[in-house]
Length: 217
Ligand code: DX5
Ligand code: ZN
Image (cartoon, rainbow, N blue to C red; front, side, top):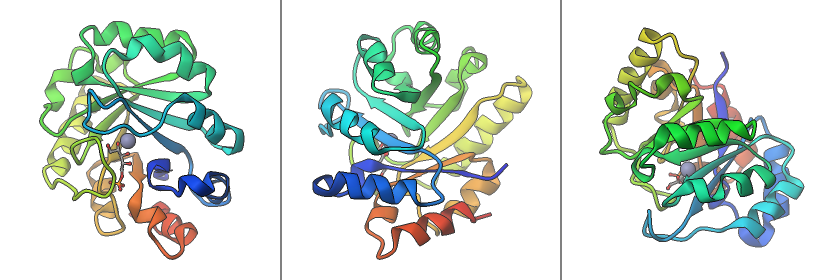
């Protein structure tokens, strides 16, 4: 299966959002990765619903929405209306994770769970069958442009093992510090989806940077 590439719009130029969305449309990228931060779950505020509506107007690929917010159930329906195809909540933000996953799926979206760097993969063993995508955070969530945490490779292998053991169909996404330097190793360990923010948008040629990520193996 070819790797799915999801550029993170957080690193785009918000003054040229339409241009940057069209760049993603015209590239080999597969999804738009959208980071929603509330200033409570993470020490930063990114953007909210009106900006996502503007992105949706121009995006011609699925929206992969990553909620870094407390009590995400409150906004599941809202993000469905805003066009999210995949809605990811944080393990650490959900008291009733299984219920949150069911709620997301009831709107026809794929349900994702993100794990902070300190959260062990084994905590998903009782919910893995209900999860469509696990997002392994390879930086502490809240900011783009941080350094990749090397322990991530180990977590991908553990998650891959859990998925195979339970015969589940969930995809493995890696988010934070992804570059052409670690993409191949991440894919070899079992990653299905690579999120990349600054590596793509700070590049002189974002389209060819996406192409290189897409063809890493
Ligand atoms: C971090 C976000 C990431 C971020 C990745 O909290 O979840 O999606 O945009 O940015 P880079 O690729 O620059 O680390
Ligand atoms: Zn993200």
